[in-house]
Image (cartoon, rainbow, N blue to C red; front, top):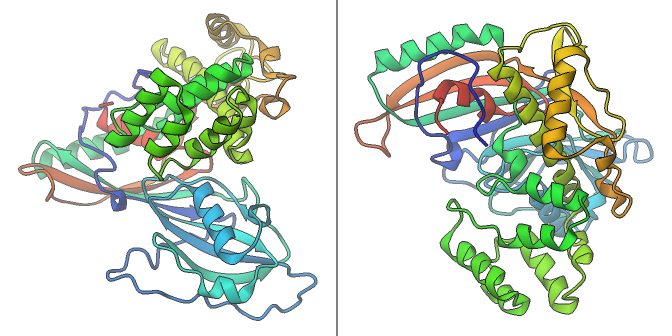
Length: 414
């Protein structure tokens, strides 16, 4: 989906996530503390045992909070790996939010009455634990202030003076905010299919949804996975697909295992996905609708408060559609209704009596994103692109927002 730009600054160009360690995400806790990367950025990486303090009150303090670093691993997969390695249930582990997969990240998690002996010895490549502390509270979704980002932009044309001027101009423009679009992570990264699957599920087209998830190819994927998807789409041979899908396709393999035994039970195959992952499909479609609304407001230069708007802290909002969606009035409401009409949906579309977990009440979200503390750290010659430069920047965002969304306004290249 091509989303219009809001700022008028000269495009910087360049490339994000050229290397995994170019994208660092550190969670900011509710008290402002930053979960800093401390272990996975060390070379060589040494095994460090987790120091766990004595539980001051085993009855009251049954939650162990630790900071979890991960490298190129999805949050949900990291949680499952940790649960297997320590012998506890996934349900006993809480976290405040999902972090990018293709990144080096640090976040706080909680474990309910963990096996301390196993946990202290836990070590898996790409995962590290530190800062253990007992608490009487579980870490749940939303229990964070935001995220701090430290990002290297590579493959930039121009000399250092030109690059600095473009970044400074962009920084000055940030006072007006940037469109608060949902980023590509919300839609499945390279494949951008999560919202497509979500709409199919809400339409009760379960078979189409499952096959779209399994078979949709992307140029950004590894060749063997892309070929496996193509062959499955052409043959519907689930048993063969189990042999050809690479081990990294964890969710697809779980679904295929079910379809080999129950070739017509697509609802059952979908249920093989973790619960938190299943919720993402409805959310992704809601996010797609939100992006369409914000896109229209950007095109019509209607990003600031106007009559009919529903405001949050003085900022206009747009709908994340659901059963109890509160529509704006006036021109903002007309834009929202036009998008729903074009998508051929209504609030009741999200009731979904056949698969209740996909239902959603709906909400509203601000259409402008505030980028806090944006700074250029340094510039240097890009060692991976001869004749090009790289720039390291840092900033932080309130929870639920995307660094790639802020930076697309600086780079202005899809």
